[in-house]
Image 1 (spheres, rainbow, N blue to C red):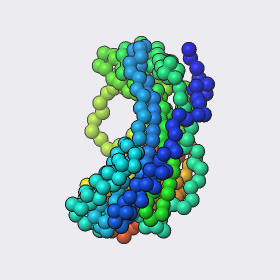
Image 2 (cartoon, rainbow, N blue to C red):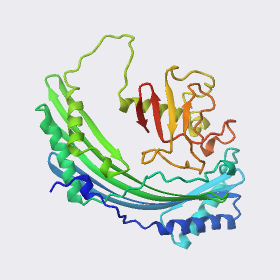
Image 3 (cartoon, rainbow, N blue to C red):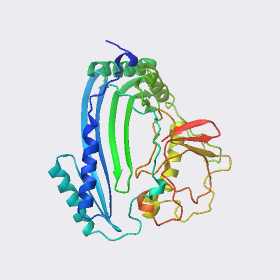
Image 4 (tube, helix red, strand yellow):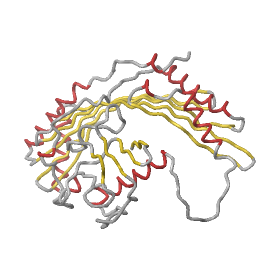
Amino acid sequence: MNKSIEQVASASSRLDPSDLGPVVEMTLAEATRRGASGAEAVAALSQGLSVNVRMGELETVEHTRDRGLIITVYFEQRTGSASTSDYSPTSVKDTVQAACRIAEYTEADSCNGLADPDRLATDFPNLDLFHPWNPSVDDACDMALECEQTAIDHDRRIENSEGASVSSHEGHEVYATTSGFWGESRQTRHGLSCSVIGRDDSGMQRDYWFSSSRQAAQLDKPDIVGLEAARRTVRRLDARKIDTCQVPVLFEAPVASSLISHFVGAISGGALYRKASFLLDQVGQQIFPDFVQIYEQPLLKCAMGSAAYDSEGVTTSANMSLPMVCYSVTCWDPTLRGVLGSRRPVMRGVFTISPPRQETRI
């Protein structure tokens, strides 16, 4: 049976996140009882389904269901972390105790600590990130088979396949700190992908295509994904070399997004703290040409990268024009506290590069 995405989409969720809040409260209370000057805890629950087919046959079916608790304690400038998947009171106490013991043996670092209270998020807009989808294995398999078959039928030079897959994931998370922050989030992520192999006299080539979205109904249809995977594979065949030269280069969207990913990684707090960034000591240097503008938009509804706060509870906001000079555009994270004077929230969300008007999601 071949059902459309809209038909198999479900508005109900099988997860029960009601335990997350109480376990976070219990964890922070235990950390305070043990004398920690500060603590942060995150409890998460998630589940997912992944169905893979290859050459017209079902290959793998994977169901996942995970939960976890991570506690980080601070004793002034010393820190320790521990985790568990057991939410029982005994396990929570043992996990906090383990984190406290680790902190006893770590070196004091002025960069350790919770985010400043005045930077924490207090407004939590509905970003429309939660759209559960619980397809049956048969429905997901039908979609993947249709996607792969469309790719194979597109061109006689498509002679093999690395498979097609359909996946669905939903997760709930509670993050809180002893400084007063409390944030709850729930998100979904669904995907459809296909990869095929083509051959001609010049050899073999492969390529792929995919579609991902918060909402299953917004995924591209299986035949569209399969057709694009085939087209991208076929166009690689019979390629030719060009002489070494200096010419303008036009990057297609999937490659262009990697350029922004490298940039964001290079200005991240962790990379600068470890002195592992190619932009280290490049304050004041031009990064991109003047005509490039990057727009940070973390509050777009239903977008894959949207969030009301970052990993340490700092509020996010739209930045309509990030400067192209390397200075205070630092992706802030806890490890950078005290390293630079700039205190800027982690950049995240949808980054739009102009010109051309192309959205690049990372």
